[in-house]
Length: 211
Image (cartoon, rainbow, N blue to C red):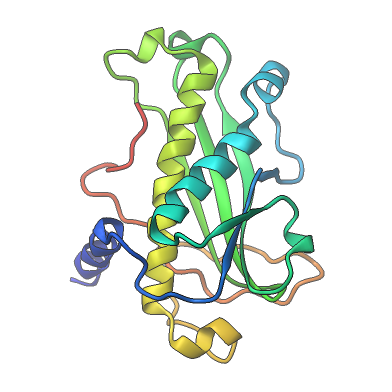
């Protein structure tokens, strides 16, 4: 029952045309950054610009729900307020387009309030093939993966804002923990983040699957 209710809440957040809470100005990190020790094949790293793809797709999806959202290249330079920090944790796949198999990325989003991580979520998305799958190029496939991740993180952010108490934006309280997503380890110079809210539960296998 609890899992079913969580899925229903995610569907409401994903279909909502506007954010549930109009909180402080939101800045989205564009481009995203690679995490430590992330291994990416050289030509994919150089030709596909995955950091830019993730940053742009997340920002575009978030801005549809938060029209006043802006971009920030370096979260450390943000002048207070809220920042959505994006970190690529893993990249899977080879060159050769769809013929060389599926491609996947794992990304962490950290919602930072005045320099403190208050929510974190991790999502892995992979390509699914489809009629045009074999004909697509490697970078085109990764772009679709990034687009799917952008939509998922935008829905996650709406869900976080809708579930968190108003005082949570200032760090006075935290939303109830959820078992759907494991907490991520904070950076050494940051206090531990609040328990992350769950990412969208898929309807079927994955409603945001990339082709």
